[in-house]
Image (cartoon, rainbow, N blue to C red; front, side, top):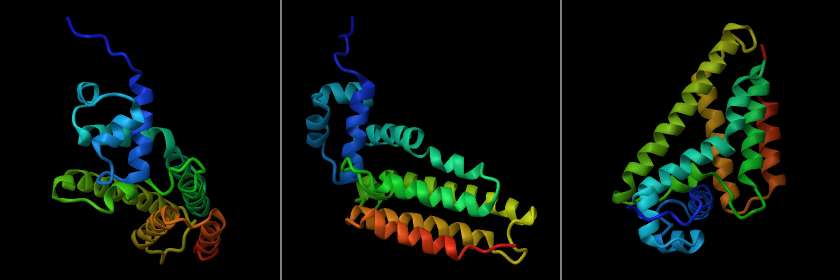
Length: 194
């Protein structure tokens, strides 16, 4: 008969998510995870598998709990509102006051050793998927006459994702909300209109 788990898996995952968010994947040790969660290594392994598996579970939770603004953005009626919702959502998420600054996906992928390559590749895949989804939404906006026919939707999608990711790096480095909001305002002021 197996032992009864003596901890709330969801709360432990929240704690692990915050450690990964602050330290990145490579910067997070198993000791960091056991300290933050209050669960010994055997309990973490039993509940989540290895560190990589735990990171991926934390990443899923991050997507469903913190990245909802991306879907909200795609549902907006104009490309301007799509982009505004993405950038303002990014701004709010990346400048949280609880110590978890930047973006889990960016923080997690910036420094990966060879052993962390599967994590880096998954984060790259997810960023590319988001970029592709945004490009498709912008192409729809162009077809609907919301963007000029000459608009390069692929370049615009890469541009917005690069701005958002750059804001994440800047937020992690300590940029203020006001500084990043100036970037959002400038980016929006350059958005093409039909």
